[in-house]
Length: 173
Ligand code: NI
Image (cartoon, rainbow, N blue to C red):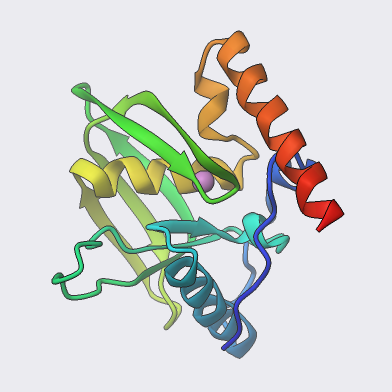
């Protein structure tokens, strides 16, 4: 396993619609391991493949993030939202590609998602609470959408300018 470099917004690779995974093979299982390790190391509760510059519709998440909680790593390949609740909820969202910036985003409170698992099986599950927010946030990444795209333009521009400054500082070392 290895920790991959996480792309920081703004980056054109974070704005692309990502390609489906054609088959689940050992390369994909290796990628899943790397994504989980990268997510836990960050630390974060979700990570999508384009965030590590991989063009594959794939995400990992673990929202059981309390120190005492048993880890619940999940790997979703080619995920699709197949049902959304009318009820909505608001979470203060963040993103590993937009470090230290948080904003409230409103989304459906529950969603049913279908995906392919690491054994190539089709799976469906309904997510609620933080899991619902997280899975929607990560699926958005596969369509080139970031949580700041839900914010008012002024707020979005402010965050983008902060990230541009951060990237200049990181480039300088
Ligand atoms: Ni994110």
